[in-house]
Image (cartoon, rainbow, N blue to C red; front, side, top):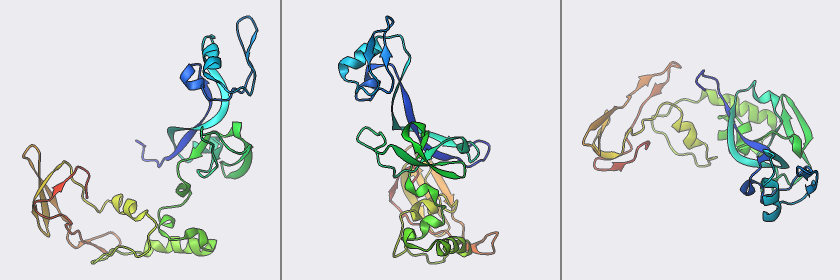
Length: 246
């Protein structure tokens, strides 16, 4: 965030929806709904059809309690903020409406792992991978490793050094691209354009307005760890590049 703290994304679990027909249709009502004359409109457990949703929407109520479902709304929380919520894992079974398929859900609350009822779940992980660190995500078939060996392998990756002739790993996990992208050691095109010059020391790209953008390459630069970073061009003269392309 703007203060420099790392935030984790979560999907919000919805327990109440606005009293509107599109929001209610297909949802299971979790409370008895009565009109202004105390006449029952819908019992708890009723599946809201188009007709029932229209009757409920005509009432003055602002929100209606429904069976909890996982939405696509994303919230970002810091480590201290997320301790206040019950968070389900990303691989918890859901039905076609995004509702929990099981009555009791395994959740994390603070440092504890509990079994909670579905209506007490606040958030859900975005991906099953987000419980792993960046280095752990680079270990192929991590789920088959002994826990101590996985921790040791993850810790030993701090000993990794840049290669003068890097190669694509024979077995990958899919996170390699993201790690390289956010390593701070790659150059990205600022605008769409055409490469007018590509040498070992710099790349020049002419954008659609005719302006040149020059990217200086770092050649055998010493790092704080006493290793060496060497950038190489992977585009050729005349090649068209898109904004954000490596």
